[in-house]
Image (cartoon, rainbow, N blue to C red):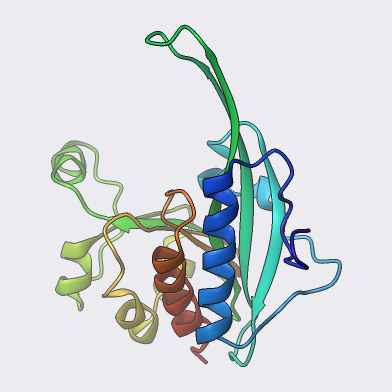
Length: 207
């Protein structure tokens, strides 16, 4: 803990510590947040997070006063590589932030992100994308794949899709049963984390 902040700050660079301080202050100024006790978010179940081989949860904040449970997980990632230019080994830790939301609807397993030109081309050859014929604006904007089409169609109702429409290009969502995670896969930044928290609390507020 640093200055009673609920984050693991061991082996961090000064700029990362500063980013944690700025982010915590920005979140406290905008949201009603608290530190939950003894919570396990089971991050190892989500493919979006597990693309990083060496990770741990360095802190969790709860966004209060939402219809559904909403958490921000501060994930600590170990980076190691050899710099060809300097000839030195680079060994450091960074933080990224994911939102975890527990919803009443069962999504099955879903991946949602902004659709790219490549997605459209591939889908012409191997159509795997879930489409919403009654919502062309959403279907044209997002790429959705699922292992259970019926669950996904029921869970991703109009209110849910409408809440997502302002989602930034870099943000991805993954759902597993009743849990939805949101990430932007960028290193911690106060402004971006506040935007992530705004989207998460908006979705967590759905009834």
